[in-house]
Length: 173
Ligand code: GDP
Ligand code: MG
Image: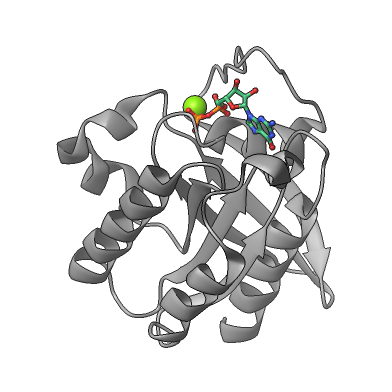
């Protein structure tokens, strides 16, 4: 069985839960006080899909998302990007759109992009409707391979993001 290596970057505003999504997926844990720190610049996770073994290199920023100029260095060589917003923050959705524009400007068409709305456990405080996100992503079908609403806290939908990305990467290999 051959192994496919893929770099996956997580982008989005500070506080949307990028680190929490990565830590939930790789370590199956959640830290409510926001103290999730990741020592290395990336974490690895192995999985196998359709008889292909895949090693995902999941890159999480250590707050550098504040410095847009850093971004190209960060996402260089990525096979996939996860663009995260927080369903309770309209502003984070707007920021997500600007990350999308940045990627579309700077990356080749074969980057696999998934859009992720996190914190669905906070449904009562929702500010970004699902239909708004689907409408936005519908206009970008040529770029966006997946749209998810998840909760890193309650472990809803997290595995699916990475499984879907891996499946897409294996198919187009
Ligand atoms: P980052 O800055 O994008 O890496 O965000 P963090 O992962 O550090 O999370 C920011 C804050 O949101 C922390 O206090 C987390 O505990 C909290 N958080 C992350 N994911 C969720 C979630 O799914 N639900 C809720 N309620 N809080 C979350
Ligand atoms: Mg973080």
